[in-house]
Image (cartoon, rainbow, N blue to C red):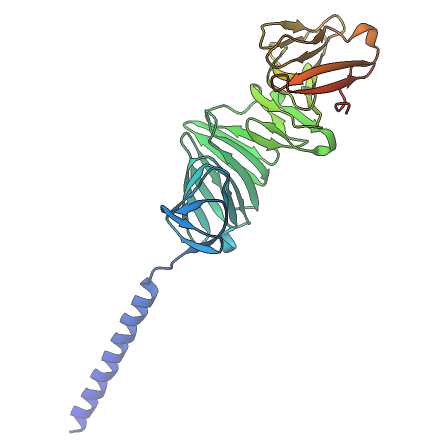
Length: 339
């Protein structure tokens, strides 16, 4: 009788332990549902369904913004992502990482230390190892993906080409990073931002050869080309800049606005405008050029204007609908437009 009782107790304990073990396994195996919050301006969809501010999206979702719309994705301890107009992002969230695909458009990603990031695009992949807090922009609207890093370090990989894009730098998918002696440095009025290869950049940013540069209203940009010289760009100007330290050349393709180029000895400088006019640096290694959109250059000089006296250069921007007056000092320094 005592033997049967002990047997029943042993079986009961064993069954209880087995049930507890199975329950623990089920609880452990239960998937963690990862979500994020959304702040919406305009029309935004998640997996094809319209969503409003304060809504929630799940991991493995695709978020799309319409024209004149944007979304801020709050990812909790993982950071945040801002999706700009006409953009699409497929996003997967993990405990300490973010993965996704930037299908189109532009985004701004900010993550704290300890969060790894891997986002692929049409022609590259952006990786952050999580060793430090990082903030960077992704732009897929141009021919090649452009990454601009605000803080930390992002790595842009395209095929066999790897660009380490440090704070204040821009990287272009498929383009080898410039060698150290080929790096140009940017300074701007009041350290206000300009646009380089479609991404925002401020003073201290590095500029690769072949960069497309655009200055906004009231911002003068100066580019230090090291042993080649320097370039000043007036407000409301757009150009492409090519330079070669090995060949000792600097070439500016001015689309609109005004520039002043100064080169060192034995360096050839040239400014070309859309009408085919090429202005080369003179014996003083200087050239000043302005271009009226849709017309010929209103003023250009190989070394300054009329004996270096103060001059006003009128540049019509936007097909002649707006007129700005750029003032050059006796040393041909470009200053903000006169109003």
